[in-house]
Length: 300
Length: 311
Image (cartoon, rainbow over all chains, first blue to last red; front, side, top):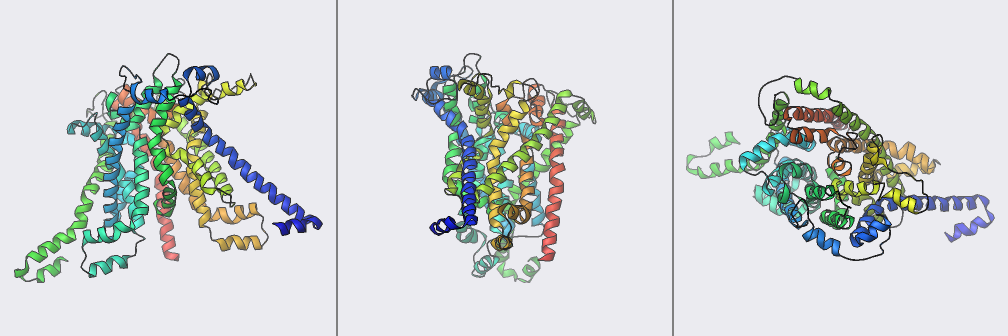
């Protein structure tokens, strides 16, 4: 850098190049900063509003630096805020979402890993065709399955229950998890499996001793994908559950839709953040692996 | 396997039985998922197809009415608005988020400091639900409390920004919010693509004296062309399935100006008790997806074959 600067003093062409380089760098950071502000602003607005007093919001508008600070809105949104007659806040819906998302994520990921293992390392006649058929599930719009699910859940006695939603999300998720895992396992050398089979290892032994230890990169992708997808899902939640059984997405819509009176932005902001927090945390801790894994094999 | 089993002496019956079970294990493991997927994809689709040809109203019934539901669907003004909105939204949303995604990816690719921080900032909306995004943006669009009030408060008193309050502009509010949510995703895929370009290729272009912008236009972007298509297909899928975003942002309004097919299906089936017509609308959504995905899958298969031949 110093050398270029020194040269620049008596070389007008080099001086121009340095200047161009500087302005280029400046432009890159300026545009990135502009977009970063646009991306972060809504998050900041919500965080601020969840900490401001309602009177402060009413007086100074939604977009304003906080002139008051309190945590009441969070407590209300969590435990006591009233939505259509029941005053229990979001905590019940939060746990509904949790008890729906965790089992559905684990079951669909486990099934996906085993399916992917079979479809990549234990291929049989027609297994490629079966894999492609399973893939179609990735593209199905949820609306196609609404009436059949309504009928099936009714027959199984699972309407308006978290178990029903777990079932839906597992069935819907299998195609994604199988796709991710299969594409990842294909890159594990077949010789490794052959050697293990010659040594007498069977289907399950190879799965436990060879495949699973190599799986963390893809299992992280699958778990993040499934967890955020299921937690954030709205259509099935709003169609198949009501009131206290609703997952948090459906409850959020009910909460923010209600009210002809002045809107309680402070409580609604806190509620929105409660609903957004689990997938955000998962993303913040695992996002690095997610992007890497997604671009390594999942999207191909 | 079975022919070899025949040669095994009768005395060792235990082994072939276990052996045969052994060869069955992979299929047994796959079977439940396969059955579930088969029911989900084929049985459910045929079921809904059948409902769309039936006289179902409040409850599913199986009186056959042919294409009546489709006819009355396409005769409905609201459905036509929904379908037009879908095209408008898909077009702007895909072009917008790809353009911004590509811009951000190229900028980040200029060896910027703190790359991980930038990436995290642009990608975090992906982790948040459309419900959350839609809710928050509906507040920002609200003329009384949101952006308009903020700018007026700064002193520009006749500033006007009330997209969601107007029938003709509400769709653009949905588009902007959709782009905000998913351009980070496009960025991540593009960035991965840019990183996968052979460095020698770029060096060769630079040695030939090509400028940065020329290198991008003539060398780098053409080599990642397949990624453009992949991003577009993924985004189109989001667009066709758009339900949550609109449900939280505008609830289809003002009036019916931001109705989407996904919203309309829900309304017909669960608000108005017109299950047959709702099923017909759902089938039209599937048709829209097929129009995009079938050619794309054929192209992928063709490309793989071509690569197989060449490599």
